[in-house]
Image (cartoon, rainbow, N blue to C red; front, side):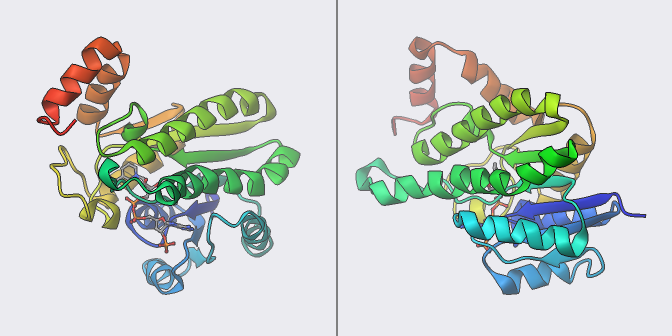
Length: 251
Ligand SMILES: NC(=O)c1ccc[n+]([C@@H]2O[C@H](COP(=O)([O-])OP(=O)(O)OC[C@H]3O[C@@H](n4cnc5c(N)ncnc54)[C@H](OP(=O)(O)O)[C@@H]3O)[C@@H](O)[C@H]2O)c1
C-alpha cells in the first residue's frame, strides 16, 4: 500500500534528492523534478520502484502545468507537493547585476508560485492536499552578502503564511520549511563558516517528520534557527550594529 503521491521540485540533488529517497522509504510514490535529466536518473536509481523523474524548468509556468498533469495521469492524484527548487546565495554588492538579483526571485519564489498554480486546481477540486515551500532561515531577515537570496526566501515565507490561512478552510495544508545550513552543491560554493551544518539525509528525515506532523513551520537545526528567530525580533537599532560586529566590518 502506498502512502500517497508526492511531487518534489529541485530533486536532482541535495535536499530534494534526499527527501525523495526518504519519502520512497516510507511508502510514497515520488515524482522528482529538476532540469538535469541525468541527475534525476541517478536519484531514481536509489529507489527505482518508487521514484519517477519528470524533467522541468520551474520558471516555465506552462511546463509546470503539463508536468503536474503527467504526474497525475501516470501516478495518481498529487497528495503532497514540495516546491524546493532554488538557486543560491552568492552575491556581492560591488558587482550588483540586476538580472542576477531578479533571477533568485524568478527561480525561488516564481518557481514555487508556478508549482502552486499547477497543483492547486486539482487539490481544490478534491478538497485535500499538502503544499510545502522550501524557504530558508535566510528569509527571516536581510543578511550581509545575501540580500537577493534573503528577499526571495522572505517572500516565500510570507506566501506560505498567507496561503496557509486561505487554504486551510478548503482542506489544503500549507507548510513552510526553513532549513539552516545543509551540505549540498548549493552550500559547497560558500566560502564562509556555516555553523551547525547538517547532512542532506538528516535534513530529509527532519522534513519528512515535519510534513507528517502538524506544525506549520519545519525549521532546523533548532540551535541556528532559534538564534536567527531572536535576531528577527530585534529592533533595527540593535540588529544593524550586532550584525556589523558579527560580519567583522564587512557590513
Ligand atoms: N543547503 C542549504 O543549506 C539550504 C538552506 C536553506 C534552504 N535551502 C533551500 O533548499 C532548496 C534545495 O537546495 P539544496 O541546498 O538542496 O541545493 P542544490 O543541491 O543545489 O539543489 C537545488 C535544486 O534546485 C534545482 N533547480 C535550480 N534551478 C532550477 C530551475 N530553474 N528549474 C528546476 N529546478 C531547478 C536544481 O536542479 P537542476 O539544476 O537539475 O535544475 C537542484 O535540484 C533550495 O530552495 C535552497 O534555497 C538550502
